[in-house]
Length: 325
Image 1: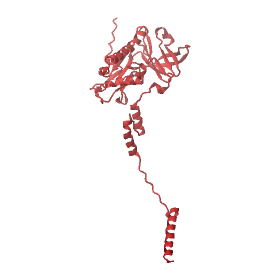
Image 2: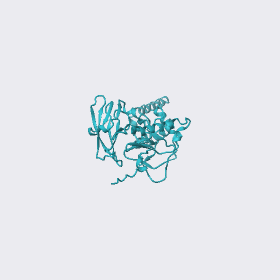
Image 3: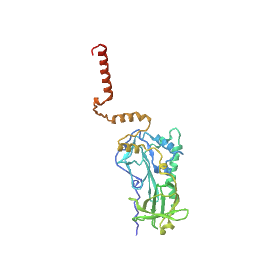
């Protein structure tokens, strides 16, 4: 009996995005790449010790001229978007990754990465690709001997932040196991106490791959365990949760969000003090001219009575001096 070989996956299946037919879409020369919150916490796109400096480095990719028509697949993580460019209202997946089989694939929607060499040479360019290769290959090497590979999208989180958990589940013949869900257990590493279970759902289009989320509600180090029947063939990744306020997780300016809020509220968003004259003009244009009408009875006004009394007394005195009275 001859076993029929399965056709190899297409490149389109491997990518974390769907590429639409048609020419590349032109973008404004002011459009710049923006590292998302997932990109900051993952560290893949970090090119400097400071987040602000990292964002300034990525702005050197401007102008982008044009980008392909793509949209993120379910389960994909967007590490970098564009400052204002949207696809049907969603963030544009400028740099995105997802799990495929036992590994990961990444998509970069531009050929302008060479621009980050500006004035510094290859330093930032090499750092980006070194971090990318490490991110894509390390988990494969660490979990390559297991049939159940469990992984989180980051190694550290803040209290209240969402933890994304992935699992790739294979049978003894290394074929994907398809099920309605797959459950992993979240354990506190210090005492081994179970915190909660995470019911993961299958990812559409990727057999044997499951994804779930859990909210990090308390600080500490936690470990993820497969079900009891799979623990001998599964890895057990750890992650840390720090007691950091939600405001400090993403302290950067998000002008596009501010602009949308201003539109909804009927206001306007500004970037610097240079925009203040426009704000003043807008306020003046919106200020209504209010006209009020009031009627005053002169005879009820004391000042009018005093003036009339003075004129009357003056007239009497003049007439008295002229001996007219």
